[in-house]
Image 1 (tube, rainbow, N blue to C red):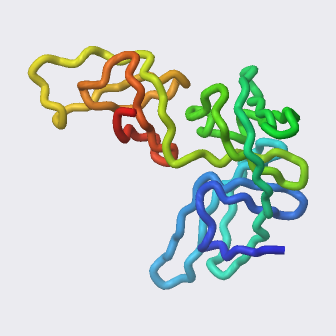
Image 2 (cartoon, rainbow, N blue to C red; image 1 turned 30 degrees about the horizontal axis):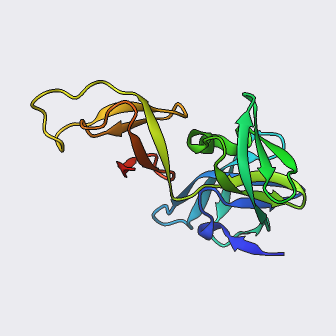
Length: 187
């Protein structure tokens, strides 16, 4: 059983409390002046999708869920679930959109991705640092504006909206950081 100190948890960490699995959505270290520090954590229950807030002391430990990863290919979504296929056994699994959270903004069909399993249950995915997505809609560049002065919104093929430089046009492929959701470069 691997434990992790409350202050060492990070966004996206999967922990086991009782018999339930929780993914850390947000956490904040609080150190009030003359009192002991604590960690305020917002969790999502992987199985039920419920949100919960907890206050943990800095010295508290929680059980870290041990995950297995398998490379799988993203196939399609039906709105509430996303389907992945194991490239070696052709077995298909699905993960709810609640469990995936914002990760769905970076999934494109036939993309190879690592799916995280707890025992035999798929609980999430590990995204690459960046993904290349095609611009579906963006306003045209304004004549006379400099490249570093202004940004404009661009809607990508997954529905994600990011701020891009004025020289990006509809149909361009751009590289987006999956952690921050920000434009990186032309692909």
